[in-house]
Image 1 (spheres, chains in turn purple, green):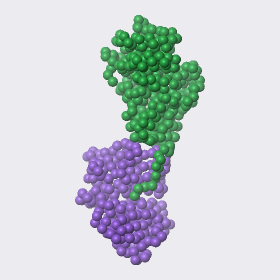
Image 2 (spheres, chains in turn orange, red):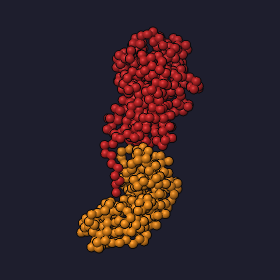
Image 3 (cartoon, chains in turn orange, red):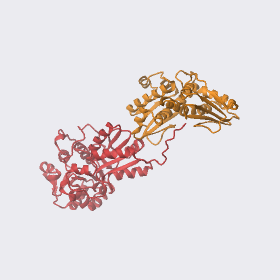
Image 4 (cartoon, one colour):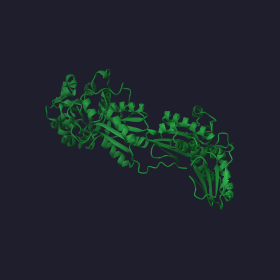
Length: 258
Length: 337
């Protein structure tokens, strides 16, 4: 049985990172072409855990579902959840493949999985489109991963959320850029895309543009300097900003295995 | 809001003066500089502290005896000559006994008369229910043309008195018996009729209070902060015209609203805020603190505020409840992926 940290890491990889293949498909027509006339299910699982997810290809579409599919085209199965995590963190871990007839589907999925590496700190695109994609994926991943920390029982996050009033942590890239939010209240969390409109955020991290967001999210500049150089504007409760900053570091530590 | 022409006043030692004493003092100082100001009472010169005016300017002071309705009618006539009558009596008599005259002779005629209702709420607690006044905001607020103000402490009362004298039309200021502790440390704050004072910013809940409950709201907010709950406090000194922008901003920002008043929950500040929220169509968790449609019992004011849960303890309790309140119709905690 995998330990709690590995369960938490896998939860983040499978629920927060893996679904971003949909963003890749939306943003990159070249990748969408790979889905043409593709139908089937690519299952990811580990022998020592019930945690699993599958990618569903449906003639031009790609989707991600949690759990075990009853009849996958192919199963990418790791010996341990730790190996699965190593694989998704960009390391080397060899899985076994079951139902080899599904290999063509796996080959269509691999480029998407490789594109997820853009989430890693060492992936530093230099072109504007690459930066924009990384920012969007990071915002979506981080907001979702914070929610997963709570749902997965991370002690610090659970403590923060348990008695929390209704609070919104919002990230926005101005000028039509991506936005994401995390809502928490009384033990519950929800990660969402776009702007939460029902109330003012408790903490609002506003990036003036993609460049600013990229520099901050990749830690090219620290938060203090980012504010000083107008790459970041914080509105709302400053103490909440510090809390969420620490939790974002926790997410990074879990995804990189640091 | 511009000051009334030629009017200035100073209050050096508000810590040692009650809300009513300040009002009497400020009114007298203003009247010494503005000969248009005329003071009236109905056998309550000492209790309402308008006696200070009587001592300094007896020629412009009129005591009508126990004849509040008559006093209001005369004030209306005097106002027609260009003078500014300031009526001072217990809130319960000004708002209830003289109600028809206030409505017809002052508000309907839009007369420039100011009413200072003292001993409002349960501030005269030990005098009994007959002398409590938990309906005046509702009554006065319902009269067209009437401005209704409930200052939070002595210093705010001083500013309110000055403000209403610069306002052309009928105004009602309700204050307590005069033993309310100070909220403001000094006079360094803006007071404008119809503009709430944001005393404390917060992100989780907003407490909108008036009168003596503002101080309690501040204490509750400080105690809530120690438990990690961020509370905004609005001093809504003007119940009418209410600061719509401040209320709607609070709804948008915190979506959890508590009103607190030393008054019935029917028709006062809570109702005014509720009307506004309903009109806006915005949803929020909402609690009205005050006297819950019942006659108040007899006791010391501080005990009564506690009994009716409009002191810091009661407001804190309401904050904890409202923070947990379920009110969204579309609660959905599934993450978007």
